[in-house]
Image 1 (tube, rainbow, N blue to C red):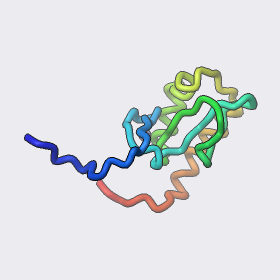
Image 2 (image 1 turned 60 degrees about the vertical axis):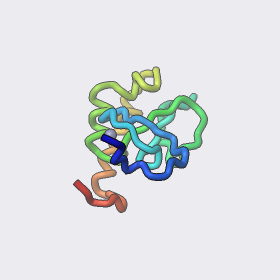
Image 3 (image 1 turned 90 degrees about the vertical axis):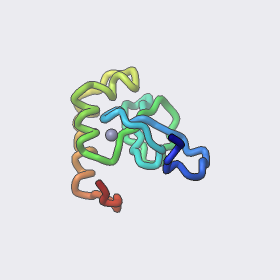
Image 4 (image 1 turned 180 degrees about the vertical axis):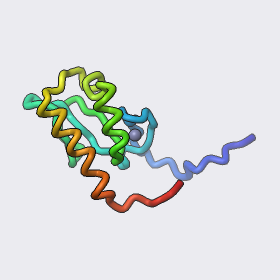
Length: 105
Ligand SMILES: [Zn+2]
């Protein structure tokens, strides 16, 4: 069979993998976190220098990433309890904000 693919035009969208659910997608669907000298922080601009990792805008993915220590593995660092709490809070907030995702599936 041929490609029924929905890929359409290939416009060099960087593909990233969610460290929560391990699904790869274009980076726009993700929130980036980055390891800085000050610690691990959410990077809303996606432009901060440092080792980064990507997580879907979904509380479930943040939970999975935090629970499995995947953030630590991905960023090769240890999260402090404060950082962990901050990231968990950020992930949980995504639930309420739920910004304009197309409700599919
Ligand atoms: Zn995910």
